[in-house]
Length: 246
Image 1 (cartoon, rainbow, N blue to C red):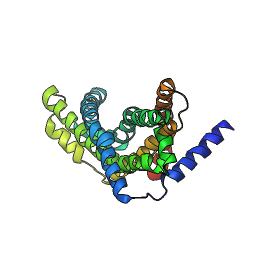
Image 2: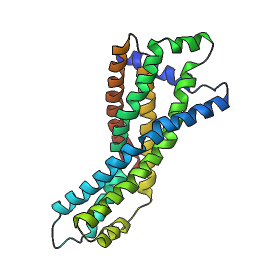
Image 3: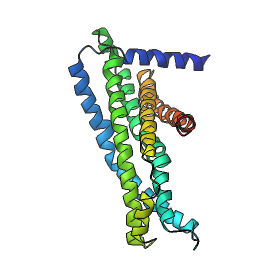
């Protein structure tokens, strides 16, 4: 019953969050701020992780398929499809759940315990729409950009490992990236990332918005937000993969 009550309260919060904003100019300004906070500030971590993961996948793939009967370009194919189908969407989303999700839950939690949200409600402001809707719009629009960035940087990491680490000839790696390429994989990755962005933002906002207590409870709500977002991302990954890749 407690789970059903939480699910019901979550959907009621989403209903309030998606209600018509009082001023679209305010929504636009808030969305731009959230894009900077949740999107642009995540560039560095996405670049660093994707660069090294692309290099590592290249080295490991070369190590595992050392066979004179298999052409070298298969390493490029494997790296490309690994990034497109799973890492740059799902794995990056799990990383952003820890960074962005905990930040959102902590921000809203501190606003709740310091009674800033209560003050908005007293002034007649729809606090759910004012605080949560810009975050959801910003992440749903910007996380696919981070996904594309991760794909490009990951492939660059694989290429640099070929050049600097003498894994395979770089020309073979480039040939593998181009071989049998399906543009549909990009739209598949971006679609999954948009769903993950909504999950991260909405779940983290829910746990932060309904914090009860003090600073300790804010920390606990951030942890719960990251854990629950990660679980839901993995569940959504299974459902979306089964649905889209048929």
